[in-house]
Length: 197
Ligand SMILES: Nc1nc2c(c(=O)[nH]1)N[C@H]1C(S)=C(S)[C@@H](COP(=O)(O)O)O[C@H]1N2
Ligand SMILES: [Mo]
Image (cartoon, rainbow, N blue to C red; front, side, top):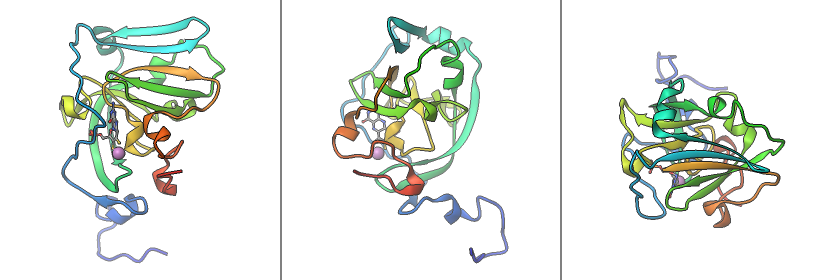
C-alpha cells in the first residue's frame, strides 16, 4: 500500500507513482541521437506507410498539416533512466494515417531520415497510442529532437519514438531495428523494465 508523504493527493504531487521502476525525473530535455541530425526541407519531406503487396500511402508536409491535429500531454521514459512528466506535443494520430491501410501484418518497422529504424507492433501504434508530432511545448519541433517530425509512442521506452520519421513498413514477423539489433528489448515496456534482451 502506498503511504502518502504529504497532504497532496494530486497526480503531479505524487510523482513517484508516475515513474516506472529505475527511472529518475529530469526537467531538462536530453538529446540522444545515434548519428548526425539530418536536415530535411519541408518541401521535400514525405511520410509513407508501406503495407506490402504494392500498397503504399504517402503524405507531403502540407497534406500532413491538413489532417486533424491533436494536442498530447504525456510522460516519456528513456531507457537511459531519465523520465519527463507532462510533456506537450502536437501532431497527427496514427489512427488517422492508418485509416485507409489494408493489411493483415501485425508488426511494423519505423524508418527515419538518416537511416534509423525501430520495430513496434502495429497494435502499439493504434487506438490513440501513437502520433507523428511536429510541435513540442507550443513550438515547431527542434531538429535535434526530431524536427520536422518524429514518431511519439510514449507508452514504450523513448528509443521507439523515432526522430526524423519518414515511413512505416508493415511486416508479417517481428524483426529488430537499430537499437534492438544492438541489444535493446524487442518491445520496451518501461513499467516492466524491458530495457535489454
Ligand atoms: N532517428 C532517430 N530517432 C531516435 C534516436 C536516434 O538516434 N535516431 N534515438 C532514440 C533514443 S535512444 C531516444 S532516448 C530518443 C531521444 O529523443 P530526444 O533526443 O528528443 O531526447 O530518440 C529516439 N529516437
Ligand atoms: Mo534512449
